Image (cartoon, protein in one colour):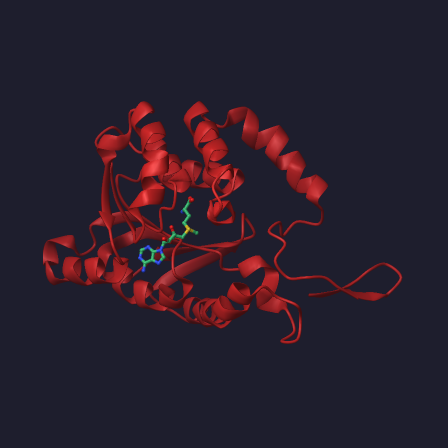
Length: 244
Ligand SMILES: C[S@@+](CC[C@H](N)C(=O)[O-])C[C@H]1O[C@@H](n2cnc3c(N)ncnc32)[C@H](O)[C@@H]1O
């Protein structure tokens, strides 16, 4: 990614840095002042377990977990869905925010990683809210849409999975989320690569999914069925509020 310093020098740095803030120090300040001191014990434990896993870059960051937890409480969410669970950090943030009779339909192609976090979720006393389905999410959405009683039945959906399917998820989720409900798409700034020149150094998977993320962002901005808001939290989160 090219950037310019105060002397007007252009420098190139590798796209892939997760923080979108001005400096690592500022991000560390947020974590240490606002996030870590208020992070529930179970989320801290799960974050530390996940940090030892080889794919730990996939996990939702602690500040984003705190944001999701707050958002779910603000909108009084009860019936929710998560696409892309990994070890369950965002799932736990959701489960802790919902009332005792709240529900999360959680989908992931990988059960093994979900089971890494499951004991922590059970210990936190919120596992009864989770209906975990192993497998690709798209067919589950298609099946749900066939039954009209599922239409408009979800208050909140968090999408954090295969970026090349986000557009496909969006088409279906707009039927399943209620008017006034929220769909949150994660990674919509895709490590800052959305503004990188084509020749910028980029990890292979960042380059591969970049065009899908750009396509999604344009499609969401043009969709009259939703109000949107893109937040530079974590790797970028776009909130979509269904209005029709
Ligand atoms: C970025 S991780 C999710 C991180 C998680 N939200 C957290 O808080 O740690 C993406 C997950 O999406 C899952 N995934 C990929 N393709 C999928 C699909 N077609 N359907 C469901 N899950 C999928 C992957 O197995 C992976 O666990």
